[in-house]
Amino acid sequence: MKLEFRELERRLNAGLGEDETLELKPQLFENKKGFKNDILKGVVALANARGGHLVIGVEQEKGNWVISSTNYDEEHVRNWLSQIVYEYVEPDNLPFKVYPIISTEKNLKCVVIEVEESKERYFAIRYWTRRSKKDTSYYLPLRFSESSRFLDFQSFFRNIISNLATGLSVGSKELPFSGYTFTEGREFDLGKFKLRIAELKEIKHIGDPKTESMIRTELRDSLPNLPQNDLEPWTNNLRNATLELVDLLTKEFKTANEPLEKIILRMLNHIAYRADETTLERIKHNFLDKLERVYTDPKAKKSSDLIRLLQILHYNQPDYIKKMIKDAIERWSETEFGNIYNDIDVDKYLGKDDKRLKELRSFILKRQAIAGKSKDMQKVARLEKLYVWIRSK
Image (tube, rainbow, N blue to C red; front, side):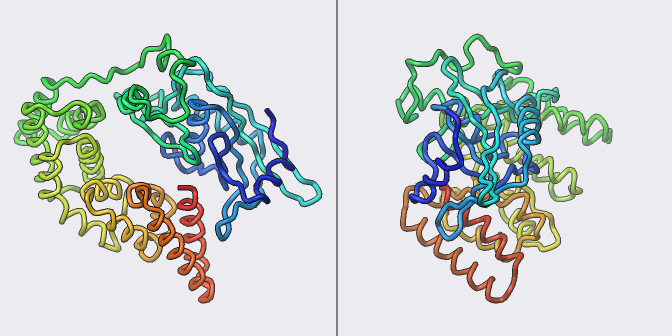
């Protein structure tokens, strides 16, 4: 059903915000690609649930949703979304349409992405684009109450089977991706994994940079297919092979240039996300101090992989995430903040603790008031972004 401007305005004036069928965003976040893009995540999540509307041109001010308007042209939004859906979403034919809603009286405009419920299949977001020849993993966005969240493919089935995916009717849909086969399998070949590790160790002694780079790339691209320990407990053979790779990466990291450092961080992220306790402790022992030095070095560039990995290694310290939020406000460069602030796992810090959510919102609002008085508009802008983002949690 088409959403009208007056209907949206009445809803917001009544103090109502997002729900299972409505998501509100201030902009497209075009600098974010694939599963990192909140618009794509929201659109796919709506299709996988009950359908609904994603509205661009609405943001939060002092805890209230307001229509801030947008300069986006609906044709630009349609073309941009069509392209990113084509590159990252499988299977094909995600059902959506784009149209503007306008108040000529108030000179306000929003762009609506209307998403139909997909009754026959679920949609997934690829880690790599269709054009990539690399093995890819898949992410399943689902709409839970007022937020869109990711489940990986295995967790998706676990949640459906255990009836934890609230609002999804299993009986109304066939198996996910009905009649569709992933272009890349998810099987992890332990034999090839161990062989590549042995080859990488051997080639380093020979001194063939081109072949060494090729083998390391093959290793890196195989890691998204590692089984997740909480779903498929790691065997001793898999653990020992992975620990051997972690130790090898530890030696490489000591003398790594920037491109190699980025590759190592990406590899460690893939491993840590899926690892068992023993492997996580090894990564923590070998890398945590080094990563903290990189993180606190004002001259070093902070990356998404660094931010995510540090949070994984501090998995039992939710207050570390609060510290990272403060760092994002006070210490990160403008480029770093714009690129990686939404890699902070706020959901992990908040959990189901309403008190923490209230304290965090209050902290940001107070800092925003102080920054406004001192006319630090850059900090004000950061705090506004953080507040809108955290308010949606």
